[in-house]
Image (cartoon, rainbow, N blue to C red; front, side, top):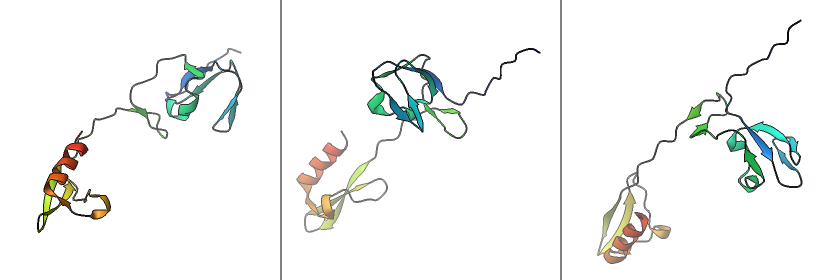
Amino acid sequence: MERTKVVKPNDGTILWQKTGGGSFRMSRRIIKPGEKFRARPDEIPKGFRDVVIPLEPIPEGVVNAETGVIEQIIPGVSPKYTLKSRGGGWYDIVDSAGKIMNEKKKPLKKAMAEQLIKDLER
């Protein structure tokens, strides 16, 4: 009887090794010191990234957990902010979706509103 190796489709997992002392739990598994394991990059908690090292290159983008396909990150569009007059010298700051960005929806004077727009666009 010949041995065969079952090749699984790329499910987005890469090989990691735990370098630090102690163990940690990850999705109902206990990872011990020195152990090599397979996991998706989004499964490793940010707090444990200093005690595990990837043994394979981390793919660019985000891995879809259901399909295992690496989805590329598309940069978003920065929001646009405009002044909308309430009358009497008071203004609201409105984003491109129409949401009022003032704190507690209180109107602002024009100089304060323009300064807030500059701060929001940074």
